[in-house]
Image 1 (cartoon, rainbow, N blue to C red):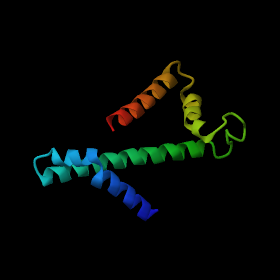
Image 2: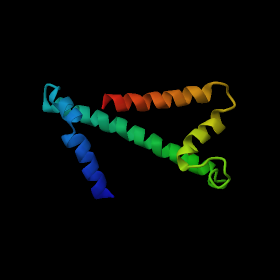
Image 3: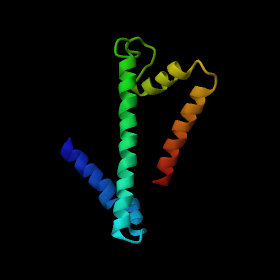
Image 4: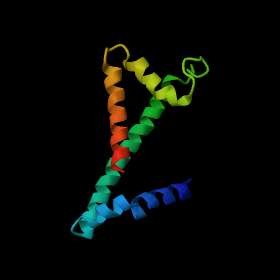
Length: 112
């Protein structure tokens, strides 16, 4: 796992064309390092929030599995199911949340 993640992150931050272009667009190596540290801090926040979301969903459904109860058909539906169950009492809020989620995903894919 450590070796695989090392190779993956090395491929993303070491030889990926978009990352190398970012390194070359700054005036000095010092600024490039600073940008990497800022990126590392932001990535740490995003990964921590993702982990926290997974733990919250696990804690919520540890005793009653929606897949076994036939409320959803696949594990990919668990996060939208959690959002609908949690935010569904407020009209429009689940739709806005999912629209923001899909918008962020499409933005990330199109920029790559």
